[in-house]
Length: 404
Image 1 (tube, one colour):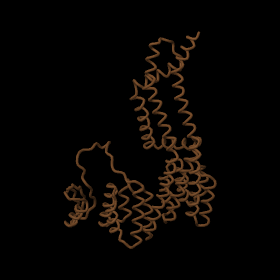
Image 2: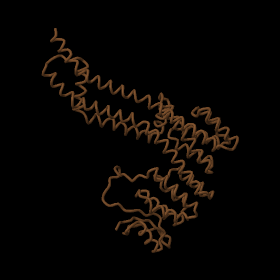
Image 3: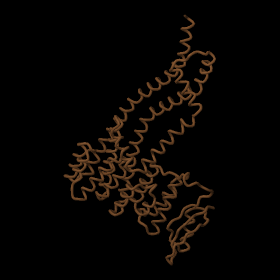
């Protein structure tokens, strides 16, 4: 038996909150309904204690959401009522967090909420883009089509993300091996040499003294060496998250980084084009679509340019002139959008732009990877070689002295 915390409206209109025991979530919901309650919220009450800042909720993976969207699309297109469709999918979902979310969706819809409003309550699971498209599908009576487009959109996004991760995996592994090898040399091997050098009583060359000092510092203050970068990284991420001006400055610098800046810009434009195309094709109003696209752009500079264009459209202008004026979007993108506006095929043109830039991103990642791999290997060899050479220099000096 589990405990379930609930919030429900009685037939008199009063709101009741409490905890009840039941075998599972569905049984708890059924019990409340049998008592003529309209269930507003219900969730399993976790046992034990928790620290707020350490609380870690379950995560709904993109793959789970993609499969859910595809299956729900099939059920809806087959004429299955949405509540029954959610009930069928709830039984098949293995991710407990997502299972609870779908159960709450079903309960909310049964109590009278629209599917859009029900999904909007779970922002950690359904993004603003997702909810906007569902709303358009619900209003237009094409929910099955929209769900199918959403699953296709998420599959494309995950495929692109997977390519980037896969391409960068090898350089990352080489870098980690280099750090581990260097740490092992400085903490495990160098101290043995230090003992030998002290017993010999010879004057050590500068490179050897530097390496010995680094080894001593790492052994004595290892906690600083590992904790300071982590603290700095967390502080940086929090600053980016909380300080708007700082986040904008960081994103502007990212776009100017040699080689990487071009990749970041191409990736952002590809995401913008694909997302905007999907929203426009799904019937989302252009102002709402631009607002959603701006929030999902992933770069504050591009977000600012999109929002500025949105304001110009509100004033009666077309989309392409303000995008061109921003200087963020390449001429080819602006031209394609302009053609799309003139011919009424904006979604088609945006999809073509996205396809083009996805190929560009793929090529850029491959080129970047082929450039990074030899650089990382050379750096690893240079660091380890320098450490080894510094340890053998005193021995070379002793050999020369003995020969003389």
